[in-house]
Amino acid sequence: MRAKTTLINPSQIFSKGQIAAGLTPPLGIAYLASFLLAHHYPVQIIDALGEAPYEINPFKKGSFLRGLNFAEVVKRIDPDTQLVGISNLFSFAYPAVEVLCKEIRKAHPEKKIILGGPHPSALYEEILNYLPEVDFVAIGEGEEILLGLVEYLSGNLELNELSGLATRDKSGNVIVLRSGKRIKNLNQDHIPFPARNLLPMENYIQAQEGHGPSSGRWTSILSSRGCPYGCTFCESRRTVWISRNPKDVVDEMEYCLSKWGINEFHFEDDNMTINKERLIGICDEIINRDLKIKWQTPNGIRASVTDSKMLTKMKESGCLHITLAPETGSERVLKEIIEKGKDFNLTQLKECGALAHKLGLKVAAYFIIGLPGETRQEVEESIKYAKELAKCGVDEVAFGLFIPLPGTPLWDITKTKNQEMDFLDLLAVGDMNRAVSWNDELNAEELNSLRLKAYMAFHLTRMIYHPFLFLKSFVNVLRSIEETKTERTLSQLLKRFNIKKKALSENEKHGIKKKGLAAYPYDSSLTVKTLLQSKPHYAYGHSLLMTLRSWKKEIFKY
Image 1 (cartoon, rainbow, N blue to C red):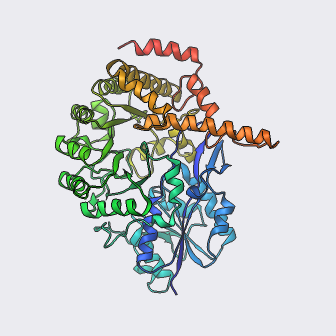
Image 2: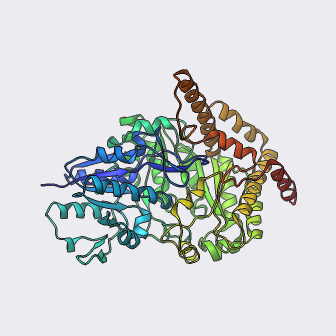
Image 3: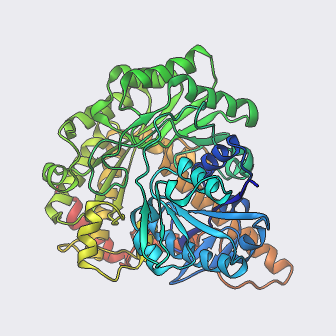
């Protein structure tokens, strides 16, 4: 008998003041499903987020869940299932995964539960020690690990023949069943295309809430896995970079185009441009097949390995938007805290951004502020550098507050200082109304003030040096056109206002009184209130007057 597996993409956790969380197809479980199906094992996918993106349920500490509630997820599990696999990408989502595991165990005590994803991979021992409902944790890439476990549950393998799994021995002690090996062949002859046919793809396409700006029928896609560089905040640090060949990548794009009419692709690779020949090969495949598609790199590319020839080819093959990641404007922070790599420098990134702008590509730049050991002066250096990027044509920036991620060196540093870390505090990464500082010198309120200054400085500089493009962004929002992530965020904000207005109108019309969230999926009125309080992201409660004083005092120092 072949054991059946149910794979679950849990509901999305968010806080009421979050400006955007996104709605992207869960490629991880889709890859797992296609791999099991290729080996003739039955699979069920329950996509709690994708199947009910307009359902909101309250959770803990002022947070909410977007998607099917726990009871509905449990109810949908096939009675014939022997193994339930739950995806846990982000640490702030773990509290909801924990509750889901408990509910599944209550309803289905006979079914085995396995967790997978970056969070459980890093904290498998803690999870198995404190969450008895979980039977296994996959450590690393899941396809071959999961297949081995299913073979074991089907009676075809012994437990000691498995690898890449953490579990408990007969005495209840946590053990690891041999280290799992990286998958060397990611092409479809070994790893089939993700089983998008088992996902509610139309919900994702129509929601238009991709990681990057969306302007058509779109999907996320992966052309490689891993990143050899050593950024201390990143979960993918120093992992072997393994890629698919250009033909295989474009075969998947062409398949999506023919099956779903998808003509826009968001590459979520950790480092797509690391191999120049392969990247140009992908571009040439698209051009030679005359595919009428658009694509972008919302997860970022490394400027130090991206040159003029690559950017030109990318543009010719339909690339519209790239994301660069300076992380900071401080050379000391780059070298001593982030450890970005000897081949990386800020001058080179600025030149890459300027060239991309000249070629007609939209360019975003990501920064992190509040890193452990970073000083106020070094945050100021990041702000100054962001202004330089605005001058050379970079279209948008994101200044994210640092949050520690399990399995990284900076996690170890922050964990030592805060033994009672609450994973829900990590929601501060997208919350406009609260923040958490992991920096000894700067508290949350100071970080928010610096963050405001950073956004103001960048956009004022862009308005001065590129007034037409600055005004075009506002026109795009009014016309529901998304060329940048900033325009997408503003468009979603307006959409939420409209949804709230319609919902309240319908409720009043039918005499319905609803409790809980006043708007879907986030509270737009609270968002705008916060914006007026001068906190574009992660607001902490400053008044408008205080903001203007702070802005006047700080911005005009330059």
